[in-house]
Length: 385
Image 1 (spheres, rainbow, N blue to C red):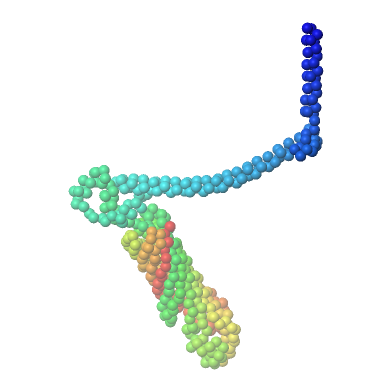
Image 2 (image 1 turned 60 degrees about the vertical axis):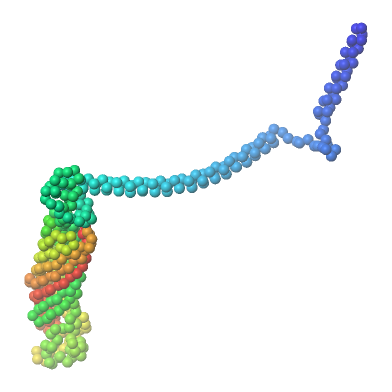
């Protein structure tokens, strides 16, 4: 019995050993493809696997960076749109706040019984929009006590507007640009010059203003004394300078100060009168300045012609009458008539009068113009600041 058991154990161990060896051979055997050929083993080691892993990692990072780039571009576009919408929102908010503040100020001014200077624009605008219909005295008195009365009372009590003028000195500044003509009426000549000027004015109070200005006038005329030549050289003179004599150019640069009194204080028409005092620098010269020399048989000497010039400095006093016609609160028209008179002159000759007849005539013409009475008519623009 024991022998049978031992024999059975020996046989079982033998079969187990053989099965294990066959399984190991099966595991370690070369792989065979479906076509019957043996597959070669892939040669590899740890370093190669590390390289492949690094390559895969870099490819993943490259793909990730591309996705991040797309994301940042999209973020930049949305940020720009957000900036535009935010700017538009802030502008709209500011405009709305400004409108609200304007509305609140207007309501406050209309509700006050005695509004200040800052309320003038609202009261004036309301006076233009609503017809000023006077109510019976008892009704107006009762409404003035009521809570809603101040606006109605303000409309009735503010018919007078003082646009462009202020009660405080130098509260309003005006600039006038004007052009026109000036007519000189002297003892021997009546001449007309083109004139232009620039003037700065400021109010002293709501009726008076003062200002200073600069003006320029010029004219051209024939030699007014060309018929007074000595017969002995007259023909030679006319041959060289023409039968009408030489043209004379007159130019005047003036500076003045003035004061105005505004007769009324209307919103559109503001007539005024004024006085002015000016300082002027004038120059007279011949257009043809070719030098010539003629012998005067009657006097026994030579007379020189050419390069004559006369310079004069003189004062003027003036009276003004005109009106401002306002188109808007800051722009209007200005019409002015000025009557002026010379108040004395000092002159300078470029050549000696004793042997230069035309130099003498320039001086005589200058005296005639300076001592004449002049009437100027100007039209221009007025700008209120």
